[in-house]
Image 1 (cartoon, one colour):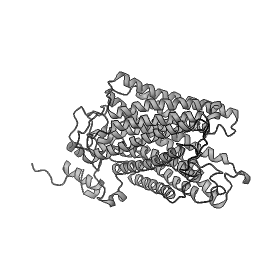
Image 2 (spheres, helix red, strand yellow):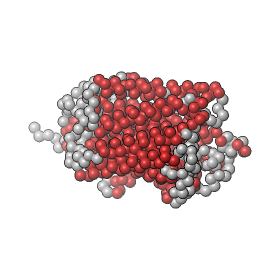
Image 3 (cartoon, rainbow, N blue to C red):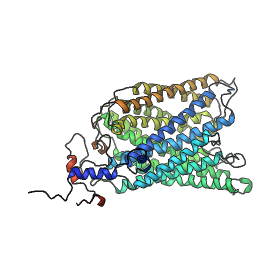
Image 4 (spheres, rainbow, N blue to C red):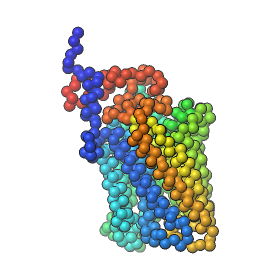
Length: 568
C-alpha cells in the first residue's frame, strides 16, 4: 500500500523543525537568535571574556601591592581598579556564567524542546551585554566607578563622587540585574512546567533542583539592589534625601538594601557550583549520589537561610547586641546544610570507584579550598573576631577562598566535563593537567599569604603601605602566587581553544553519564530532541537501549509548527 504523501516522514519532520529553530547564518544569527543553545553559549563566552578582564585587573592590584610605597598606580586609579575587579567578578562573570550554563543545559536535561520564553532569554542577554559594555567603556575612558563594588554612600554620593563614575555603575548594574531576573523567570517556569512526561520533580536531575532554588533566590534577592540603585541614582541626579543623614536620610539604608542582595548572592554563586559537583561526582565515581533527598533539602535550606545573614557584613556599624547575637548564630547555622552536602559528596566518593580525570581533580581542589574558606567563615561569624579583622586583607582572602574555591574550581570541572558536549570533540592536547597545578598552587600561595598579612593588620582598599610592619615579603609572595595562577588560567584558555579547533570528533558520551543531555547530537542540533524512555520510572542511561532518533521524532509530543503545513 502506497503511503500518503501528506504526513511528513520522521526525517522530514526533523529537518523542518531544524529549519525553524536554527539561528540565521553569519553575524545576523548572533543578533537575532532565540535558540537556547546559542544563547547559552553566548552567555558563557561573554562571561569568560569579562573574567579575563577581571583577572587582568587583579594582576594590576597584585603588582601594586608587591612592594611598599609603590608608584605603579595612584590612589584614584587603584580605587577604580579594585572597584571594577569586584564588580566584574561578582556581576559580569559569576551570575551570567551560571545562567548561561543553565540556559544551555536545562532543556536538554529536562527533555524540553526549548526554554519557556525564548525571546525573554535573548532580551536578558542583550540587557547583560549593554550593562557590561557600559562598565567596560567607563573603565577605558578613565571614568570607571571608584567607590567599591558595594558603592557605599556617602562615598558614592554626588558630594564625594561628583563625576559620572558612580552613575555608570548604577545604570550598568541595573541592566545586569534585570538580565539576571529575566533568566531566573525563564529557568523557574521551564523547570516547573516544561519537563518531559514521566520526569517528576523527584526524578529530575539534581542540577535542576539547585537551579530552581537559585532562580527563586534571584527573584527574591535582586529587587532590593535594583531598588537601592534607583534610589541612589535619584539622589545623585535630583538631590533626594534617601541616604544623606543631614537631609533626614540614612546611609545605612543602602547597606541593608545592598546586603539583602549581596549575602544571598554568595549562595546564588555557590549553589549552582554545588549542583555541578553533585552531577559530575557520581559519574566519575561510577555510582549514584548518596542522599539525593538530603542534598536537595540542604540546598533549599541554604537558600532560605541565606536571607537571614545580611547583617553579617554590618557587625561594625553599631548593630544592637540582640541583632549581633541573632545574625552571628544564623551565620554559624548555615554551616549545617553546607556540611550535609560535603558529607554526601564524601560518601559518594567512599562508596564509588573514583577516576582521577581532570574534572575530578578540580572537584578535589574544590573540597580542600572550600573547606578552608568555610572554616574562616565560621571565624568571622564570631563577632569579637570580626571586629578585629573587618576591612583587613583577611576578609579579602576569606572571600576569595569561598568564591574561587566554591565557584571557579567547580566551573572549571564543568568546563572539562561538558566540553565534549559543547564542541563534539575529545581532548588530545592536554595542557589542562599542568594548568590545574599552576592555578591551585598559585592560588593557595596567594591567599594563604593574604590571610596572614590581614591578621597582621593590613587594611584592604588602600593603594600602598609603608615598610617596617612585616608585610613586604608576604605581599611579594602573594603577588608571585597571583602571577603563577594567571599563567595557569592562560594555559586553560589555550587548552580549550586548541582542543575545540583541531581535536578529532569524540564519542557521544565519553563519561558514561546518565543524564539526558548526553543523548543529544554533539555538538547540539538547533532543536532539542531527547531520547524516549521505555517507562516513566526508568532513569535515562546511555548504557541501555534507546529509541532510534527517527522513531523519537515521529512520536514526539510536540506539535510541529503550522508554518510547515504538517499534520499530526
